[in-house]
Amino acid sequence: MELLLLYVTCLILAASSVHLLGLLSDRRRNLPPGPRPLPLVGSLLSLGALPHRSLARLAERHGPVMALRLGTVTTVVASSADAARDFLQRHDAAFSARAAPDGAHVFAHYAHSMGWLPATSPRWRALRKVCSGELFAPHRLDTQQALRQEKVRQLVSHVDRLAREGGEPVRVGRLAFATALNIARLDVQGLRRRIEGLFRRLHGMIDDLIEHRLRERAADGENTKKNFLDVLLDYRSAEDGRGFERQTILSLISDLFSAGTDTSSATVEWAMAELLLNPSSMARARDELNQVVGSKPVIEESDIGQLKYLQAIVKETFRLHPPAPFLLPHLAETTTQVRGYTVPRGARVLVNAWAIGHDAKVWPEPEKFVPERFLEKEVDFRGRDFELLPFGSGRRICPGMPLAVRMVHLMLASLLHRFHWRLPADVEKNGLDMSERLGVNLAMATPLEAIATPV
Image (tube, rainbow, N blue to C red; front, side, top):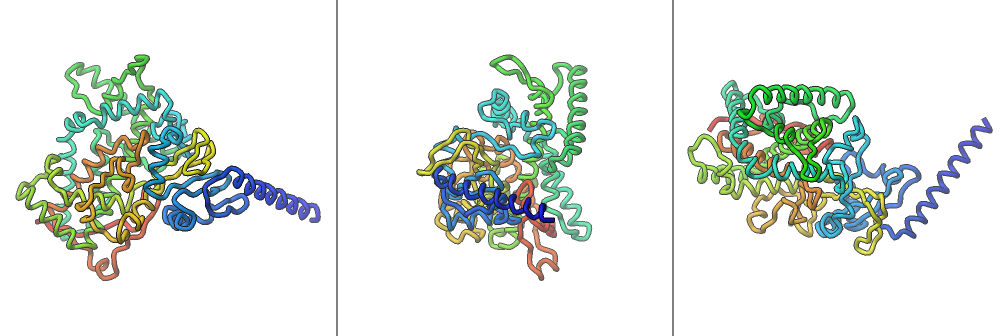
């Protein structure tokens, strides 16, 4: 017993010594200000279930560039538009690497995934090139417009059936997820959990689809109509003439589905929830749709450019409920001076897009849903205006943004144009739960259910 007590005492003393040495080292390294860490766990206990809110509160005390210890890892958080510009634009190259989580190591996913590969990697450059030049280029998206239109038509048809069969509540997020999921001619499900068993099943399904597609191509020859998968199968690098390995294609398709479908469905769900709580905004959106679209039963993507208020609704939703509150974690490749502070090599860097969108210095009454604010000032979400960063900025900006933007506007406009919406009586009485759940993205803790009535 005495030996055990001695052992525990020595362990505590050793941990305390390491902790004190770490604090002294932090001061010498000129790190940005931040909360004083606890031994071993650092500031992990301060994060809670909604770390984007916790870190925003800490930034109010310590400043827009803040350093804290998460476990043993030094983490720097940018919580203002100017701070985000410093990391994502002025020092883009220094912070373009990724800090891959443990889940990304399953089947060496991090070594093939565009999300986790370093920006200096030839494979990352090739994947980025095929995404921006082929998969999500305007001409490629235009050729797939009929497919997106058909999936939205199926969405409207399903809501119409529920509305006419006794007014059953519509699970808005689930429907939006299914619609977004089915636009790349691959019916793959269950991509949100990065665990080994699911990866094995998922990759097996995609492998079967690839083999099936290769057989179709061999049989049909030049008459085969090309889709996204064909672009990946046909790709050859200009540098060495080599195409993508099978594992790289599997990882890319997994990333595209898990990121794109969750992001689009969560945004549509949040937008509908905000509109149900703000009837005047809902009415203004419907008035605009009536003026621009009229009695035309189907909204086309060419109509979206004229729907200025609808675009403002989407921007305001991105501001209040960014799908990825911290974007994806960056990694300092070199020790870099930012705003007079030292960000050491190997530090994790988080950009708190949620805090930026709720900054009262930039956004008057930041907690209120006011789409009109985007009619009064030109702010874009494509990475040029750092006040609104749902997709990030710089070389690590989300490559699927062009497709996600088209789908979100098209789904939301179609739901508003074809149906009147109201909350179920019990929700109307007790209030709509707008609390958040942070998983792969920022989702509603209680899925939205609303009752649709055909126009």
